[in-house]
Each structure stands twice: as structure tokens, then as C-alpha cells.
Amino acid sequence: MATGRRMKTVRLSAVILAASGGLGSAFADDIALSLVNPQGRIDIPAGTITRIEARATIEFRNTETGKTFGHEDPHVEICYSEDIRQRVCQLTKQIVEQPLAIVIDCRVVTKPIVREPLCSSACLSVSAADMAEAHALAEQIRRGSNRACAPSS
Image (cartoon, rainbow, N blue to C red):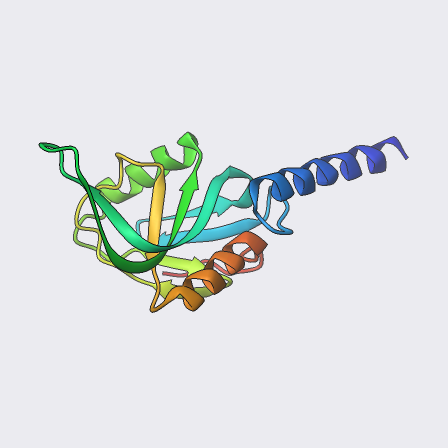
């Protein structure tokens, strides 16, 4: 009986975390998305994601003037823990000029070529055709539905 209560408490904590962090109904150990290449796979649990946001524009900052510029570019910005950032950095250092499949809801949503290691930021952006697609993609990630996906590249 005590074990059942502890399990419920852990799940309750995950639900509270998800509700306060905007991660929908995913439990902390559900896989929100996966990054897949023949060299390695990183499953990103919902509990390691710190922010998921559908955005209409992408912003750049001019380092000389300090001015920020933006242009229309619907996308989902996914930010994750330092542990995941280190793993993404390590994998992408090994696969420069190779594709990296981004798998959400057991579906490859994009397969960009890694042009440089992804080490400087703990966030990843996934492009979308429009804001409706960006919001739908963000919701899929929040659900954390990759748990049953078989490894693939």
C-alpha cells in the first residue's frame, strides 16, 4: 500500500510540474521528443523540458549595436535542462554535416543537417509552416507521447 501511495505522489508531483511548467498532461518520465542519428539517440523526457513556446518570429541581436531584429519565422522553441544540453552538444559534435531526425509523437517532423555543434544554448527550434502548425507541434511535445516509439534514424 505504501508503494502505491509513493507512486501516486510521484505522478501527482509530475502533474503539478507539468501544469506549472506548461507541459500539458505529460508525466516527467514521458519522452517529449527524440533526436535521432545513426551515431546516437537522445530521448528528451518531458521532465527535463523547461519551456515550450510556439513563436511567430525569430530574433537576432546585433552584437555591435545591441539592436534586436526579428523576421517572421513560425517555429517552436524547446528549452531543456543542462544535462540534455550537454548530451545534445556531445552528439552534434560527432555528426556535423549529417542529418539529425527530430521525432515527435513517433513521427519524424524534420531532419535537418547539423552544420555546427549545438552547444551554446539549451534551446532548440523546430520550424513550422505557420502558427497553427507551430501551436499543434508544441501541443504534441507537451503531451510527451514518444514513449512507445521504436529506435530509428
